[in-house]
Image 1 (cartoon, rainbow, N blue to C red):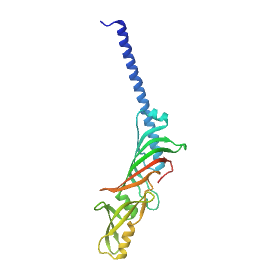
Image 2: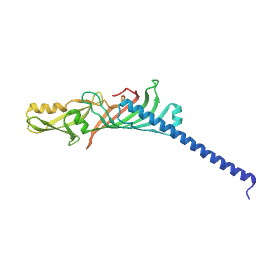
Image 3: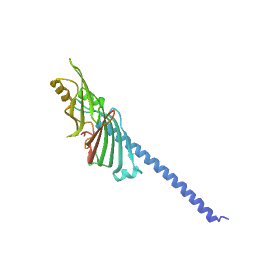
Image 4: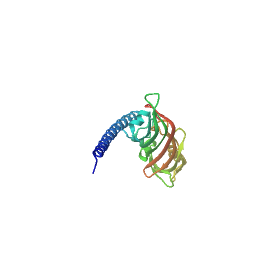
Amino acid sequence: MTLPFGRRLVRGWRAWALGAVLLLGLGAAADRSAAVWLQKSTAEAFQEAQDLPSAPDVSVRGFPVLTQMASGTLDRIDVKADHIPGQGVRPVPVTRLDARLDHVTRSSDSGAAHADSARATAFLSYADLGTALGVDIGPGRDGRVAARATLPLVGEATASARIVVASGNSLAFRDVHVGGDLPDRLKDVVSGALDREIPLDGIPGGLRLTRLTTTSEGLSAELSGKDVTFRPDDRA
C-alpha cells in the first residue's frame, strides 16, 4: 500500500520533472533563437564585407549558445560562401569558400571579430582562372594544369604548368612547357601568359595561403591563420 506521503512525494517528483522539462524546452528554444539570430547577423556582415551576391551559410557550433554569448567567446563558427568576387584588373573570384573560425570574440573595434585560429579551403574553378588569364585552363597530367589558346595566323597552341604558392597570398604558374612546333617568339607569348603571379584577393584578410592542389574541376587552396582579426573592409 502506498502511504499518503509517498503519493505526495511521487506527485512532487512528477511536477518537478514536468517543470524541468518545460524549463529545458524553453531554454532550448531561447538558445535556438539566439543561434538563428547570431547566424543571420554574421552572414549579413560577411556578405557585406566580401561583397557577395548572396548571404553565406553560417553555423554557430556548440551548446548552449546563450552561455557562449554571455561569456563573449563563441567556440566555433563555420562559414560556407559561394562566388566571392576578386579585385584588380584581371580578378580571380573564389568559386567556393569553406571556413572554420575557432574561439571567436568581439574585438575592441565594434566592427571587427577576432579568432584564435582559422582555417579554410577555397576552390577556384578552371573557368574563372581561364577568364583571368585569357586562355582556356583545364586539368593536366601529374598534378599540372593544361592551357590552350588560339593564336592569330598560327592556330591552337597548348602548354602545361605547375601551380605553386607564391608570396602575398598569390598562386603562380611555374615550369611552363609549351607544346607544338611553334617559333620561339610565339612560345614566349604563350608561356608569358602563364608565367606570372595571381593574387587571391577575394579571401578574407588574415588567412594565409599554405597549399595548392589540382582537381578535375579547378584548384583547391588551403588557408590558415592564428590570432586572426576580421574587419568589414578587410581582404587578403
